[in-house]
Length: 302
Image 1 (tube, helix red, strand yellow):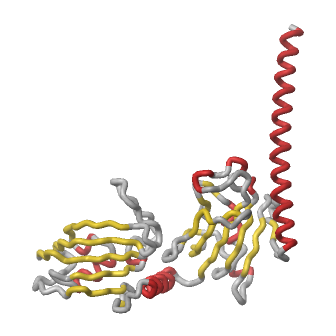
Image 2 (cartoon, helix red, strand yellow; image 1 turned 90 degrees about the vertical axis):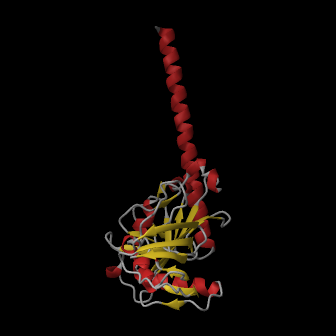
Image 3 (cartoon, one colour; image 1 turned 180 degrees about the vertical axis):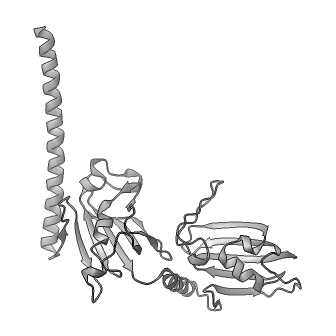
């Protein structure tokens, strides 16, 4: 019995030692991170604000002129924003919003990246006015810890910097600015803005005599691209305009058989803030995507 008790005692003591050493290591990493951040803020004269709940993160906001606490984002508000996730140690960028798109979601929903929830983002947003920018400094113990995330290049115990730009403009206004920027960057000067907000570039004027209405059967081919280059699909289909996205319901009746056009479509007239996945495993369309459609009308049947 004494021998068994001794073995149990030794095992228990070994467990306590291992647990204590892990706890000390975790505490030391936390201390190291906190010291790194404190030194960085002091050296660069940065007035970083500590999380009021003292979880460990800091943030540095830049509010727009005339900001007041009463105008801060509420949980039920929608926030339109861009985000960049980078390394504190060397500035390496792990993720960023594409140039010609913005993110958008309710402030009270879950924010995060690479499958990890980051509560600090929602918490900080509620201290900002629309149009503000902010940098959030996440110690490694609030990010990916000792394991890091090698698949995207995040090293062990890496402090993460989350840079966010919010927008006070409506999604429609943002879309128009993004499409105009895309047209300018690609030297497209002959795209005409339709009253709907769609930009139209006509390559060939159709000569067909059948007038397209919402119930017409229209056979057309298309090439679909996203403005950020993450999507490239080519296909043909036959459908009634009324069964298609709003942009096609608006524009197809303005064409005829033989028309060849290129349409730059704001997200609100495409798939809006929905994520569109391909059931066949093809490329998905991210939320708030402005689209570049090249279309040829092949046949019209009434």
